Amino acid sequence: MTDVSASGSLARIRAVAMVGGRDVYRDPVLVGLLLVIPAYFVGAWGMIVPDQEFPADIATADGTATLTVPFPELMTTLIAPVTAALLVGITGLFIVQRSAAVDRRLTVTGFRVSELLAARFVILATITVLVVSIVTAVAYLHLTPEHLSWFVLALALAAGTYGAVGALVGLLVGRMAGVYILLFVPMLDILLLQSPMADPDDWIRWLPGHHATELALSAAFASDVATGHVVPAVLMLFAVSGIAILANVIR
Amino acid sequence: MLLVVLPPIVLLAFDISLETIGDAPGIEVPAAAAELGGALFATAFLAGLLGVFQVVGGTEPDRRLVVCGYQPWEILSARLLTIVAASALVATLVYATFRWLSDITPQAPVLVIGALLVAAVTYGLLGVIIGSLIGRELEGSLILVFLADFDAFAALGVIPMDSDIIDYVPLAHPHAMLESAVHDGTVATGDLAVAGTYVVVLAVIALLAVRIRGETI
Image (tube, rainbow over all chains, first blue to last red):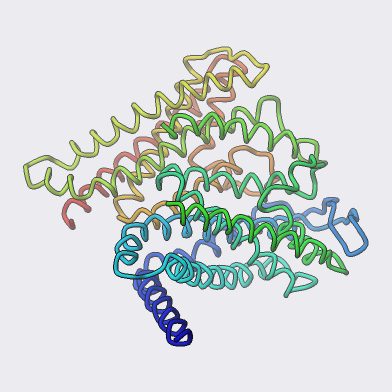
């Protein structure tokens, strides 16, 4: 009986995820933008900054070290998670907003809230994988990370965390106000406040992008990656996702 | 309501963020740059998003208005009037927040609000163009956000850049107008001319975009 219920649940998640996924890949403009925007944004920033070297505080396995790094590579390392966070965050906001009415009807027809949440998560996770793959490929034009797999993980964590932030924002405010918030937050968080050239205050460690950005910088430049940022970054992802799920259930 | 509350918060966020990065070696943050940049972007990008959402959200009503005999330029004018009215309100609020945050007393308050409005109209028109050509909120928002974020940091000048492209981003000249209005109490004719040209060219493109949309919807 339990197996039948579980398989039924999986089938329902699969059905909702498939329909939602079709909405994305049948939208050529959206797919095109998910491909073109990283190329434009990451590619452009890597080209227009001066080819100079700057000192930057980079987390390593043995603590923070001041390394001299080329500015185009440093900017690419910061812009890559910003791009992924913006794309997945705004998409997350719209997924939540667009699915609200549909989900209400599906709940009436017998779908559980957990199944609908799982299906939306699958869609957002798929978009995250797509965006991170493209951003990584474009980032390679200007940057060869010391540790590629950790760099990709950092991008995925930044994108996933901001995807959850986008979903939460989408539950709390309207589309336009939500986009307006997301327009500024990842940029200010990751690019300015987490800049390794600045001397940050302690409260900055609690921002959504902190640990993912530290991991990305470490993976890009340090000989030994500061893996101590992985668990806090994952916890941040879970915390924001948990709040978004709670807000969704309450709604 | 949020659209009235959020811009001053954005200005405050810029203030805190640039205070942090302003100490970094190789990065120069001029006096009041954070507040000025925050004020400009908070006003302009709100107008841009208003443009996108007004046009996309107004597709159905606009279609009926075209059927009733309204001309595309009349519809565009109505949309722009709404954007300008909202931007004027936001610019005033942002200016008040700027006065509260910054130690600098603007030399010419009217010119400061004027520069903010020029930036808002520029981005409002960009939003109308994007909304008309793309016709979808998500995709339009993505294009506007990535254009705006690039523009913001190019115009702000806190990240060292080695390219002439920063002189041509939409907010480069409104930003220069804002700075000189605050510090000198004047606006350079050259900046005003280029910013005005931007507005006129974008208005023509917006009219064409609305006309194309009117024919295709």
